[in-house]
Amino acid sequence: MFGALGELGRTHAMIVQDVVRVQNRLKAMFRSRGVAVSGKSVYSEKGREEYLEKLPDATRGATKTMYAQYDAVEEIRRRAEKDLVQEAHRHPISRVLESCPGLGPIRVAQLIPIVVSPARFRTKRQFWSYCGLGIVMRSSSDWVRTKDGGWTRANVQQTRGLNLNHNHTLKNIFKGAATTVISQLETEPLHQDYQRLIAAGTKPNLAKLTIARKIAAIALSMWKSKEKYDPTKHRKQG
Image 1 (tube, rainbow, N blue to C red):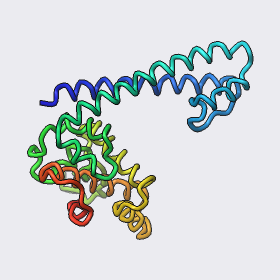
Image 2 (image 1 turned 180 degrees about the vertical axis):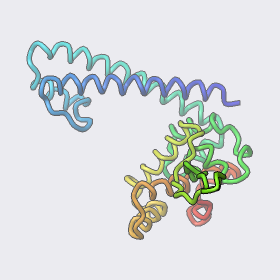
Image 3 (image 1 turned 180 degrees about the horizontal axis):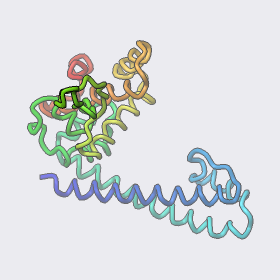
């Protein structure tokens, strides 16, 4: 059903990795010559000229070649991204899910072929576990010897963490969506939920996890009901 979308998603992911590799090589080239590099201005048409002037003449030609490689793979990435979104929009549910805070066209296009059907998950907690957002308790040395040589369960401190058997792409999607809500969508009610958690003393990483779990629960509910995001209704799902 979503075979073509899945193939396009995997291709897009590989191309994005290629873009990141070229970006890292460019920054490494400048830093190896003592040029401090930060941000994304080094990749822009205007910023690169300024950085190139700081390089020795012997290195400038090689760096220009690397810029040509970056421009080529970036153009391919944009084309792959366009094809991915176009294929995703063939499925009506993509428009519904894109209304969820933090879930843009790319994340939705990656989400749909992995989940396929929301009916696979009876509850949001099952979905959280599949996404790597399920809370589990872990312990070790649970049994100790008694004086008479027998064994008894020890009262050990259990540590809380996330489940390890999960789909890594889904975890990245919802953690990325939470980051978008926290850093960019200041008027969004979920952003206000994050601020309330921080004000109450919750650690930022745990507050971000809470928002990611809320977004996952909202997306699952929207998918099942086929209704666009309504903050007065769907925030209760988290």
